[in-house]
Length: 511
View 1 (cartoon, rainbow, N blue to C red):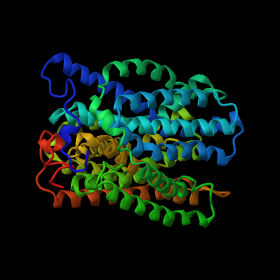
View 2: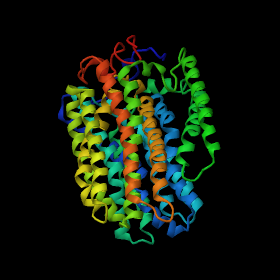
View 3: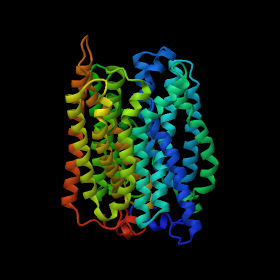
């Protein structure tokens, strides 16, 4: 298949994609539910470990470097495999890749929960992150395959709610598990809780998820682009490593990896253009000629830089600065999770009518909530800060729900189904890179005032929030430019948005 081949020929509609019958419709929503449960597990493990670090350190006598790798190793491995795994699902079988990722993630969770040493846990987390990266891009691919029109917006709304909730509820669930299981071994259940979910989800996913047509499987064997995989992987590692190790690798030499990354990623782009003339590349550069996709990826990069960093510094402020328990710190972040989950479901229904304007409204609410949280800490810092920040975090959560799900829909709506996995992998990679950069930048500002003999935790949090708000403001500017530059929002049910017409998507003549 060449890059300009109409996507409809690569992926005909699966059973239930356009069926009016109740049984087929129910089946695809059940399939989505299984995907979201599995995706929730993998994304939850990005944030749930934060509140467990003190007990992990005590239980395994870990060094600061080891603790950093427990966090950053997962993110690094996760981001490394997202795009190749998405392309593998496009080329071979999304169901087979999804099931493999789910099985590996469940096994890795068991290994992490059984860890007996620092090295064991770090390796298990690397394994777990890679397995999560295999699984996650298949979810957006299945949504592109199974849903059309307004239903696709609702499905992406559910995915957006899952992303927001998994990030926000992680500290609460982690704190609850540690509280119930005790400080000595409670951290193990942060990982072991995935086992029953994974084991139950595997047979259900095998039964409900659609298999690809045999012709698509055969075509994928000659179009996997191994050179592109190597160049993108090396470039991603060189880009992420200085940021995920920012608190442990203090030498300025680490920043030399950034020009190395630029060279590798530049070579990747050049290779993809060359390879794409005769084959289906790992990432089609034609995707970035579609304005909503390019804008959505850039917006995700900036927004996740600010959004994810907030939970990192707020958890540290509460637990270390104010001596909150893991459970209390999780409860304090719950208003954000509630607002995000509720708004994401609404945003998925409104995005086909309001388009990028909905994202602009959401970003304005996030900015208002973050700045109000900083003001609340200025006026009422102390043991009750969890209560004073509850309303601002609720507002920010509502805004976040109107950003993540609608942006996911708008970014991927014109992507051909045959490229849904790799396109979703690029979007997820942008989110992971943004998270790593944001935590490093916001964390450096935070730690500059939270270290020393007399740390000023309230000021550290306020300055950190201000920097995070600046990153969200960058996302807002991207959204405003895209809103001004674009035509009036088109329905998610148009031919191009379904990826079923070669003229509207990146793979067609319109790009």
